[in-house]
Image 1 (cartoon, rainbow, N blue to C red):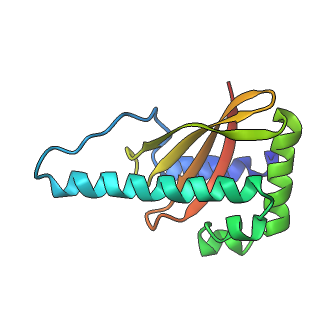
Image 2 (image 1 turned 180 degrees about the horizontal axis):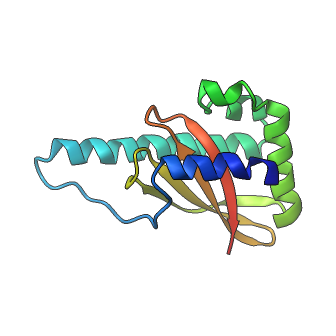
Length: 141
């Protein structure tokens, strides 16, 4: 997990930092705001499917959610190792608790709180502007 930290730091810097997610509603008639909300819904669905794939051990499918440039260095095996390292430190994954989307930067960040055997963890899933994952990291409460 530590070897991915530089990628996460770079991604966060490119996205303008990770800020707490805010509840968002689109004003009536504001098409741009509605588009941002739709993008949030899209990345939420992508993040849900991504985490479900990891939890079920389908690392090849999870890998397909990543940006193609990231997939040149990240393999299904290394993704499996990253997930297994997380499980080793948190206990078994029990399911999602809450999901929020931060659209304050250039690209969305999905913050999925997952319940693990040893307690909840926030999973930060960073996306590019094409709604492809560029990084995932877990933060301990």
